[in-house]
Image (cartoon, rainbow, N blue to C red; front, side, top):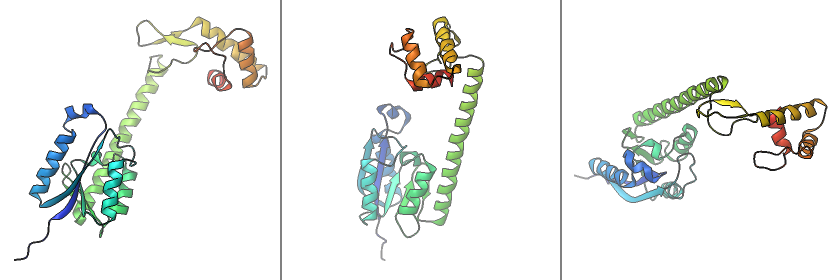
Amino acid sequence: MYAMPATRTILYARVSTDKQADRGVSLEAQKAKGQAYADLYDLQIVEAIIDAGYSAKTLARPGLERALGMLKAGKADALLVVKLDRLTRSVSDLGMLVERYFAPGKAALLSVGEQIDTRSAGGRLVLNVLASVSQWEREAIGERTSTALQHKAAKGEYIGGQPPYGFRLAADGQHLERDPAEQLLLAEAQRLRRKGLSLRAVARELEAKGFRSRGSRPFAAVQVLRMVG
């Protein structure tokens, strides 16, 4: 009886930092899970390609580019990852990859964690649904975070980064309080601006009056703009 040849597969693994080893996505863990999946589903691993120290925010990774080049050249029939986020976290990037490399009649995309196999219509459907849900979840988290930060700022609570000119971090490390010296600076900058002076002219006048930025340098026009709007 004729046996179908095993699917020639590239095992792709990625970590962005060494700390990810503590969360079960170390390179060793990914390779072990990928090989076990390949053994179970009769996949022939032709090469294991690794991107160490690269973020999923971009597809410009040497390992991924090599893997995709092999698929395009017909040197492999499928790309295997342990989780989709090892490949990309972007729905638009994923859509581009599917269209260019994993569409029907092209190479297959296989994921251990999500049990995705784009060799079937059902597998492609699951891939698209998961990608859309993942994007929605990230956007929802971003919206909640932005709303929370705006609420804290409105109450005068410190939200990280440099406090705006005229304020400083209070002793409790959680709230902002007025900085008397910088309040004088703000008042002078606003007075000069109301006189009709340009941003550069205001910066020159502040320097002439002995005012300096937090870095002890003369003010630039863009800094004046941030102070007085």
